Length: 228
View 1 (spheres, one colour):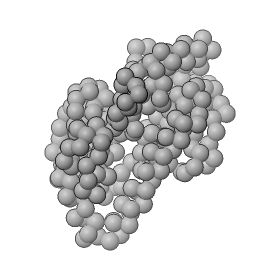
View 2 (cartoon, helix red, strand yellow):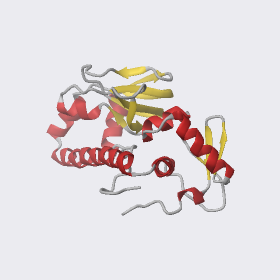
View 3 (spheres, helix red, strand yellow):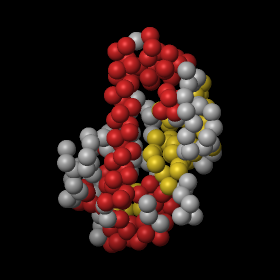
View 4 (tube, rainbow, N blue to C red):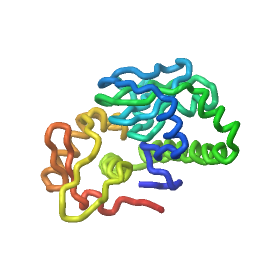
């Protein structure tokens, strides 16, 4: 699951409490619908905090017919924050996965608060580093793990990131509903490959699907490597 750092792959950690408080104090609530664009590649800086639903960072791939997902952003995760901190533009597209609620805040608020509060600046430096470690772990997973292990790892990461306990002898619902194509975009697989893996696990009674709802058993995660 984790091969180099302590950060989980694909889903960055929750924002520091101070950041969440700033969003709730200065942010404006917005709702976006499935696949709706929040920030285009190369666009001027914006800043969001996910409060419900999920967003994804998409990167274009000239060798595939669809874009790949760099990160999934679930509640209490900020979006577009790294480019806001550096004041640079990036070649990443931010879109909603299903209906998503966010708080939108001026990109200048966090950098200004960092200048006024040295301890917070240090906390943010550590947090930004962990976010980058998350992205590196995701790329390492997609480059080194076998297809089935990538998808198994993502399902486990989703449970852990939503603070859902992994328990034996019962079905656990994956808290974020994704299509097979969306799963594939995260772990670098085709929709057909994801469907085949789900069918194989279903036949072994390791997974159960009802529409986009996915339920898993802890046996699916047996022998997933994690150095931590």
